[in-house]
Length: 327
Ligand code: CP
Ligand code: NVA
Image (cartoon, rainbow, N blue to C red; front, side, top):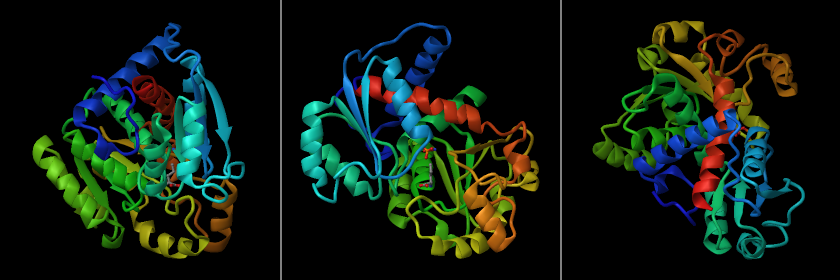
């Protein structure tokens, strides 16, 4: 498998074999790290991290992974770069491509990271756009593989807004890996017909099953993984909160749903999650709407079935694999 020089922009650009290779490569790098085996595979290289939206996990995962690989890092925060305002994305790409060996980009439209990649001349990695979050899916798949031993045939139910980055990318990933993907939400939150059609074509080759179900109990029966994400994503206007709370409250991941899925079912979430009142936004929403948790109850989040922190750790190992493989 040779991925040298390749961008990592969306999972649609990769075959199932390539995705599995990256997941297994990450597992190997994780094992090396745990046993203290140094792996400075990219010694002396320099990378730039552009964040037009905020981050905890993705930024830290890229930085720690880069240091473990022997690289140097420059972080450009949402207010510190001229990108798009004073200088076009293509011009910025041509500048950074002459200084850095690889560039991570987190921002708004997918088109922006695609333009960056066209002009940079070095590998570009998507750290989240409105449409996709491919490095997150690698971490999710590593976590599922560690837990169940395989990805093939596993049933993953995504509860909530499946039109956005997480729902889209999980659907593509599951289609590529021959998994059983269920989007569970009111119809208007299902992924676009265009993306669903692409995934159905992929599923014909891989044996994946794709379903779109409005009833939570039907959708989650026998699920191996119940997955959810925040109801309002970064960059969306505050005005959508009211509608989302009304529409998605019946899709909250709670004990009843987990019990309905069965004992083997695990809970996953890309994080950050609104499961209690220990956040500023969580408290604001509580004051206005009276709810104490949103997409997941505190009881599920803190339960034995919840593997969210293992999943968060795996962001680092999988991002490391992506960088080592493409540089
Ligand atoms: N899951 C994830 O991408 O987290 P951050 O927004 O903290 O990077
Ligand atoms: N859908 C969320 C994912 C965060 C990792 C967002 O875009 O804010």
